[in-house]
Each structure stands twice: as C-alpha cells, then as structure tokens.
Image (cartoon, rainbow, N blue to C red; front, side):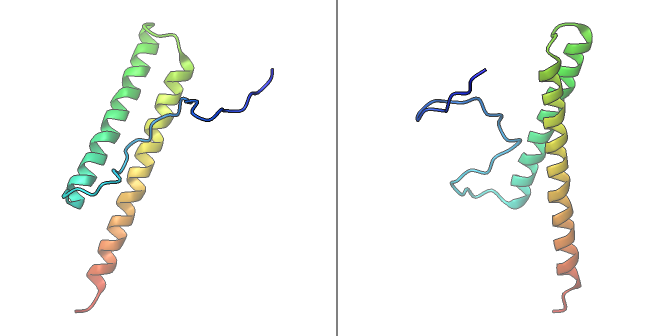
Length: 99
C-alpha cells in the first residue's frame, strides 16, 4: 500500500466541526450565538440517534459511520459542556467582584 501526497487544489473529505463561528461579525448577541451552538449540538445528537436506529433496524450496514456519528455527537456535547462550565465560572468570578 503506497501513500501519495495531497496535491495543491485537491480536495479531501474532512468532517465538519459541530458548529462554526463566521469570520464576519454579526449583530448576534452572545445568547443567540450560544443558542445556535446548542441547536447544532442537538442536530448532531439526533443524527447519531438516527444512525444507531438505521444500524439496528438493518437499513444501513455501515458500523464505522455509525460509530463516527456517535463519537462526533459525544465530542460536540463535551465541548458544549466545557463552554458552559467556563461561562458559569466567569459569571461566578464577576459576581464576586466588588463595585
């Protein structure tokens, strides 16, 4: 088996991140941005659930893609929880500040 280098301009299949931040700044508030991120994680979770259902009912036989969907959902959820923990920590620190 030989490996060939990726040529300039050649596309490769990369998984999409759970959610992305646009390079252009919009007038979305932090709450709206966080809400969209939560919705993206929910969609990924539902896709993983559907992949498991499709595998168990025999509609799809691809175990690898099912496992990738499950791991992607798990990673997205863990990332969302870490962001939430940082937000709570920042809120607690700000609330301890004296005015």
